Length: 486
Image (cartoon, rainbow, N blue to C red; front, side, top):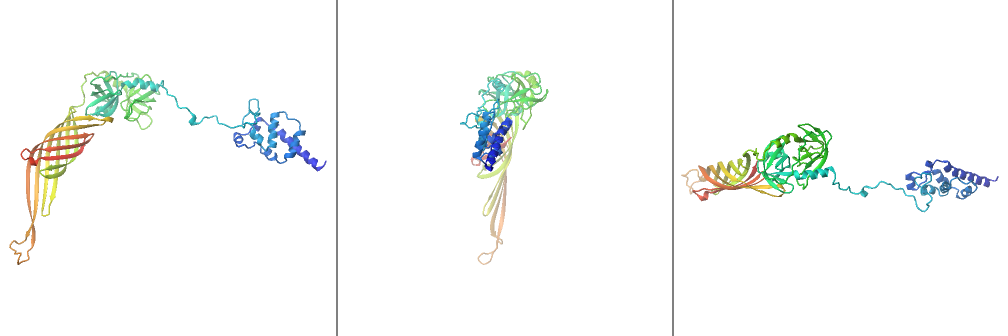
């Protein structure tokens, strides 16, 4: 046998071995990985290296070899030998149930690897769920909700319980010392009386109905893990905010749940699936479980109320204040401060007592004049006029009449320059100069009626008073002051 024919025979056997290896291998071994199929790299690196080595002789090998058992597999293997791995790239990434590659007969369409998982942007928006428990609770509870205001400012959320004119609110509402009003979510408003404050809950009785539909209290204590719904109307919200949670602990005196509710929802109801009140919301915790006041003892207090219950708030409310001001009196300007003690009666009338001191100092080239004036007391009676603005803001204007008793003490020191020796003759002698001080003190008690007006917004106060001198109009005094009142 010549060397040329021996080499040719060796190549033929090599080609036969390459053809027989894919036929005898399992189907899983013939499968390229998804990464290999996407990159277009062959799964069998040896075939890729040997395929293009002797392209001409390798074509004669299959001509003398026995026909393969599987025509599709032989075509895939031949492609692996002749194309240097292109056949592996053209194979699909997965086989069908019969072991043959799906779509293997389609030579014109490349097999693309796609991920069936949809992207986030392709997800549709969640549909509205009007039939959800949260929506049902909101619809059932909304007609009972109200906003409690003190002097026009928002103080608490409330809800009608047992009767249309009985309002349950937070304990903060009981601290209002001014006019109490209750406003429904529909915009109807009326005044209210604070008839009970205990256990962090305030009970109010409306002076007239405003269209509220009362809720029913639940008698039984909720079970651990039972779903509950917190309903609140925080500041700025136009509709109730309902959140769902579960009972974490409950007994006759305490109830804790993980139903989150924003600040400003204190006084709102915590209800069950049927819309029955199980507790009154308190200030929410920073995270996790928040406390609430069980409704059972509150319902007993509501049952004992009568529509004509008297207001438990005292008739008079004390107050304190401090102001800084300036007084223009008898041609002088004095600066000072005053302390204020006041008492409010029936929310409209204000009696105030002020004690203050004012002083000034005037200096001149040859004379120094110091005047101090102490106002021992000023008593005034005012009537408060209230105005309410949007967003729960309010302001009060209080005209007042009073009487002042003032102790006025003046001290004038005059400095003069003259000759130290009065007998010294200036024309013939050198004379020395000397300063002479003369002090003059005056004291006076002054009794004058006063009239003024005060404008207050919250704790801030601005006021003006005039002190009338009936004997000498020129001695009429004026005072302008600014301060805080609590």
